[in-house]
Image 1 (cartoon, rainbow, N blue to C red):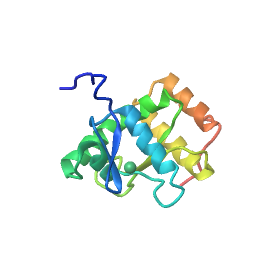
Image 2: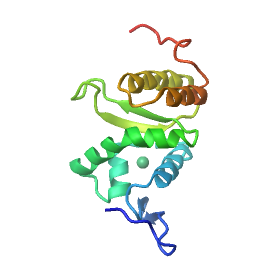
Image 3: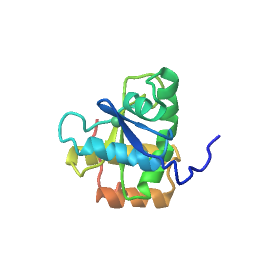
Length: 155
Ligand SMILES: [Zn+2]
């Protein structure tokens, strides 16, 4: 059961060796901070992963923790959208399950390849009714595209 943190216990990411961990488990502002951290590395660590999120927010990279992370991503997407951020979620097309397993994620940075991928993701989320029409419009705004006017190349 989650309780509101008191003034003495502000949720934050604290450094532990080379990585950071959340003091309060899964918190969207901390998820945002963590993803921004990936974006600013400028190196090979731009993409985050369920493994990385499990370690950061639940302390350990276990199958149960990764599953718990994956279950939270649709909601995280919608909450980050409220901050004008687009969470790009890459799925393994050949993995188990109809939609493929989430393998990587990052904050959208305006790259053209990323935009095509993100547009596809919005279509998928819309088809699954993970997004309201207003949320779809908001996502289009961030991507600077309208899905109807931006057909993806045929497979
Ligand atoms: Zn990460």
